[in-house]
View 1 (cartoon, rainbow, N blue to C red):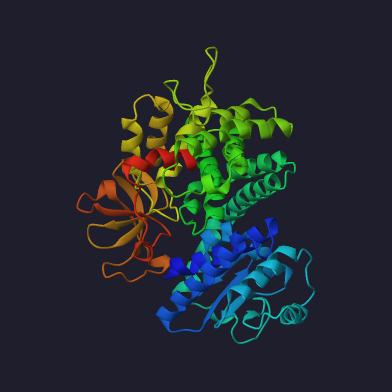
View 2 (cartoon, rainbow, N blue to C red):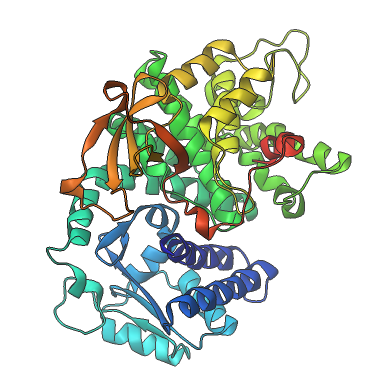
Length: 482
């Protein structure tokens, strides 16, 4: 249920993003509005409720006293809309229609200036005919019933919220910046405008600055219920993995920054590929594959046309689908010398594609992804692949696992043995959630009687998903497309 709640927020943000690029009656805007109405009806029907609400506070989404990490990264456009409206969140009440949602997306896309008061914003909504969408009182204000302010107390949920703020505030800001950068450049490409390379470089530097705080952890909270989010999230996760890997290899601080920037920009060429090919859930035919394979050269050309001259960034965009044995694409001339940066981004790109959640599949466990990559002889730089496995282990930080004694836990760090990380227990043996102060840390390499029984990514609720791991025959398309 919680994951479906987060998915609805991401869909709202995606609707605003798509409306910024298109118009009210564009198929993408209509599809997102219809999907939201359908999913909202399903979720409310299960709980026998007639409204869906969430708060916005300190540039984050809040529900029942908890920060929603993934939606707060992905849904920056919706957060900005709430802030411009001087409100503390939204309530969506039944019966709500696709037309209501399209109107909401239009206002979110067009409202650029801050409205000075909540009363003015409410009048603005009423004049737009949005009677089924209410604006909540800001958290700093006293009083209005219905605001999520009432849920901020000394409850376990409030404890979790305080710990989340302490743990993830710097990381959340960095990841929001990364996500905004990729989204803004995608929007610029759509309008044939110049991309902002300097913003990408600044965002990469921000990531490096917080990378010693477990920078990969936050991304494990992210799931993408729509195409717009996961294509952007892919570049963000590749940047995070790339920065982590570059640091583990002992590369200089400057080079780490360049790798993070390269990860953010490596897939720019996808913006020039038709949506019908880019987002096709099944196998590509031969003609579609040839078009898709142009994206790396197209991305390098976009960078050059925008004045980029850094060889790390250019080589990553051009060569992140090149194999170590000379295969892949684009075709390499005889004199070509492969870039270490491209080799590093290649490893991160494929690992992310295999292990991330997509609208049509669950996350593949890292162990299975490693097996596939190791068996593909000649594909990857041996040192880069070995380093990735070494730093992530079989259970990367942020992974959610079920222990052999029935408790659930989140991986905090890898242990001395790949299969025995340090974990933090989040749920008791009967599934009861534990408040953050009562979540014990366990070094599994020191407690041989406790094993990991099951793996899944944090934020991915298997009971809420019908997606399955892709068949082996479709893995090449999975890697090629994403």
